[in-house]
Length: 496
Ligand SMILES: Nc1ncnc2c1ncn2[C@@H]1O[C@H](COP(=O)(O)OP(=O)(O)OP(=O)(O)O)[C@@H](O)[C@H]1O
Ligand SMILES: [Mg+2]
Image (cartoon, rainbow, N blue to C red; front, side, top):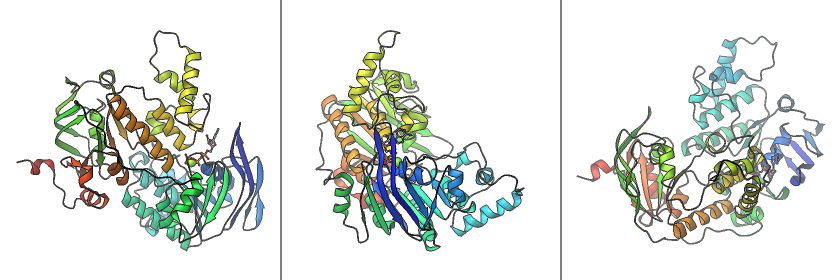
């Protein structure tokens, strides 16, 4: 199905999220849509898939003008969208979720739906258990479920809004194989991202948005420097590695063991010093998150001790850790870090240290304005948090951190951020290390990020943890091998 967007406009108050966008997407192509945080990518795709009404503009499908009033409308016309924040129903079973959206009154037998689910999944090499609960699936598996569901409902064009955020490298390969297959079958695939290497790997063509406008289109072989300039209006680079002088120990982990139903890690010994950055590398689910959570009092260790600034906090609550200057930044922004429906201002009030019982709204408003400025958040104090673009939500989360922290624990600090924002975030984090002597302990699936910003790295592999590796003594390839278990030396065996 060929999709034509003509002169699409969409504003939110003073924000011109889509400003006169005209783009033709041929059928059978994988069309990339690239742009910095807040460029208007999700908005444009929501217009196409019926979640938003454009203020002006036209949509043509195979040359026919159409009006799309709702997502159901869009799907009837053959357009399905997978959202940036998954919109599924975790307490449901896979089969029930699969059947959501099937036109009512058609008296569909479950047995038939089950067979359709299994057949479609098999076609794409997905393994989906119809009787599993959606809540037990990984993000990658949920996407797979959504893909087969939309196909079953008759989608001829599929929109993927930053689908690789939060899935493992293996799942990403599977997803890309599925997308190539969809395109080969003549479906139209739109792939939204801000990652250049994904455009290079996958897309037959790419359109670049900046500040609501279509800046241009590009075709393979891509000139990556040119794409960066199109995205940001200038060249962007990470700069040299900066090393911070380290101070006295902040966090001491002694012979620690943590476990959940899936993994157990044990025998972790580590001292993290003021100003130091420790990166945790490993496949998702190898125990990194557990270790981080234990260091914040969010998970109780089964053995060993955790000391903060010379105080034994083993088994103490998160509140106690917070009092000692520890903060935790989770990966699931809208589930754990931010509260949907509350505005930026309200978040600032919740996060602020209140002196008395009375909330000083004026001061809070002032503070919110300042933080919006300093953290370059595209939004206003009264914007509900979920109306911010993904990258701006992440900035908001970081803006809520109080100054003078001793230890900052972070899951994926730059997940969902474009290159420029990621660099900016690390600049501010490194400044905390230098000027406030904060120690940082973080996990990431981006090995380049781990290498560039960490002083030392711990590699996790199937429940085992490596000795700390100085970042200067390793590279992406070596780390990649360790994560896959090749040449991996767990601590227990390395220390006699
Ligand atoms: N429902 C909404 N209400 C108010 N403003 C909105 C809403 N949705 C988006 N915006 C604003 O429109 C602009 C474009 O947002 P959009 O989500 O389309 O960006 P994006 O390119 O998808 O960014 P990201 O890479 O961060 O996801 C942003 O300034 C955002 O705050
Ligand atoms: Mg978006």
